[in-house]
Image (tube, rainbow, N blue to C red; front, side, top):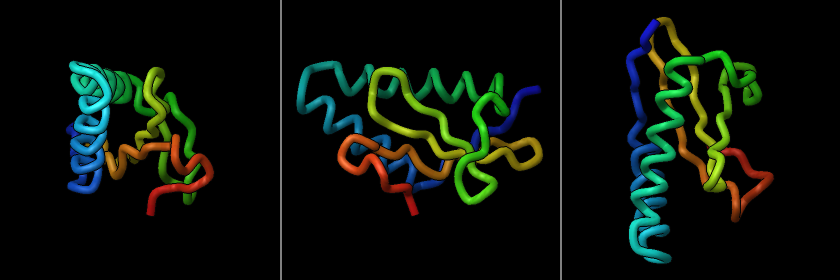
Length: 97
């Protein structure tokens, strides 16, 4: 089953901010960050229940492999809703609101 992908504006902004932050550190690193986020979206779409529900009894957390980010998402019927692409490095114990 293929799920429709819905990305909240907050998550889009976090992705863009991550891109610019990594790009400012090294040329093309921002593109590599975007690629990893997109690959994770594809993986979640293929295996939506792979990640356990961990947050407020309904949200799942997928951890990027290379970059210190969490993707917070929920499956609602035929839609994968991405609420946040959250940087964990600066705030390891904080969850997005």
